[in-house]
Every structure is written in C-alpha cells, then in structure tokens.
Length: 188
Image (cartoon, rainbow, N blue to C red):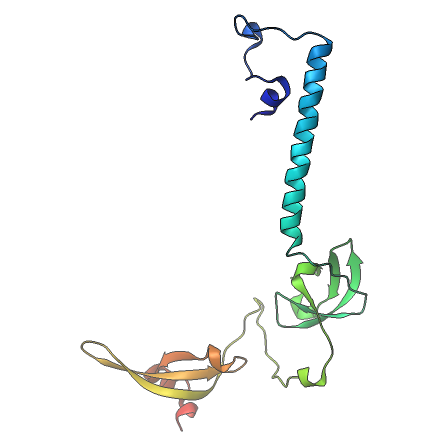
C-alpha cells in the first residue's frame, strides 16, 4: 500500500472530498493515536524485512581484512600486486606497474584474493610486449592435432594450434593453409 494509505487508513483523495459520505471523522487525540500505531506497525514490518534481506546477503559475505604490504591476486588480471594503502573499510590501493598506468589503483575487497607464498608458484614466463591499448600479439608454439572437416561438397584441413601464454584447453582450430602461409616454421 502507499505510505499515505498506511498512515491514514484510506486512499489519497483531493482535499475537497477528503471523506466519503457518512464516514466518521477522526479528530484530535484519536487521530494521533491511530497514526502512531500505524507508524509503529510499519517500522516493525520494515525491520523484519531488513533483517530477512540481511540474512540472505550475509550467507555469501565474508569479512576480509588485509595489511599494508600483503601480496594479493587481483581478480581482474592474472597478476600479483602489493597493497600500499587501506582506503576505508572495504577498499585498498595497490602498487601497479607503469604499463597499467591507465587503470585505477584502488580495488574493492571482492576483487582481491589473499596470496600465500609458495616456491612451486614460481612460473617461468616469457616477457610479453604490450601495445599501447594493452593488447599483445599471439604467437603459435606448436600444432597439436591435424584433422579434416568434412562438409557436403568439400573438405577443409584444420590444425589445432597451441598459442604462447595459453594452456592446452585454450588451443584453437585454424585453417591449415592460412597457418602454413603465416607460420611456415610450424610445419617443418
């Protein structure tokens, strides 16, 4: 119901025809007492609804707190960064590399995961040269599978290519003739 209807017990009408014919008028203390009871009832129901919604949201919420100098994984990118400042209760400023100067350096705790140092986490990687728009050129490493796709009237030779900086699950199927033209060293 509308707030007016909850407070006054009737639908809002123009001030000229405030009451229906034959409707009894509430005056003075009776009207104030009735409005006070309705307001108390509304507050109780709103409190019940708020506590119900809070219990729903608390089921997935977890309290996270980090210290300055902790290493974190950022959810937005596969990189490890160091917290340099706490901003409020749920945000942290990070030390980002110069290549990411266009990215805002404050992140909400939902974007962070605690990093626990482990020597087995050290991954050998090649330095990726980023362009100004933060993209990079993919380079094929090897051909995993050769296959022929059969259509109604023709056959298309395909190769499954493993790309640098990607896993085997991310390998793609490409036309063999295009790959031979671009990367002949893969077919030796």
